[in-house]
Image (tube, rainbow, N blue to C red; front, top):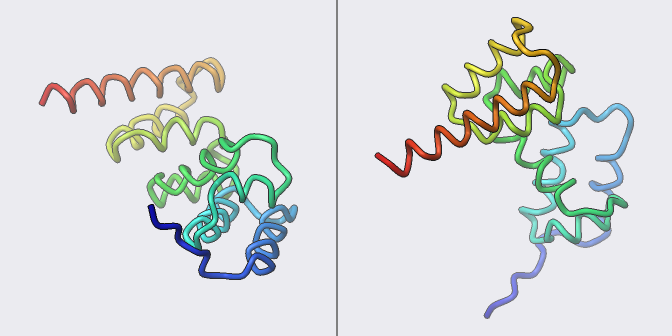
Length: 133
């Protein structure tokens, strides 16, 4: 097994991690900064420690927001699509993301939890269709 060494020094990775925690950094910018550090060879666990989080999913789920369409990333950045819901939507196909976003913006859900459950159900449907096809 070969170990890949980080491509940027730890001090630079830590500086990026520190910047990711600034109050003016939106969740999409934060995801890009986390991904930059991971792409440089640091593990999500190492990034978790750099930013002072306790759980690795805080990093991996934030990076997953980069799977959102550009329009949905903009909605997360401007706060019109809540981060928690966006993570569920990011797991969907492009069409599924559009469908859920339209429903969210139209106010078709009783609350964010209702929208998250709908996104989870759609994910199951898409996954089942993918395996069936």
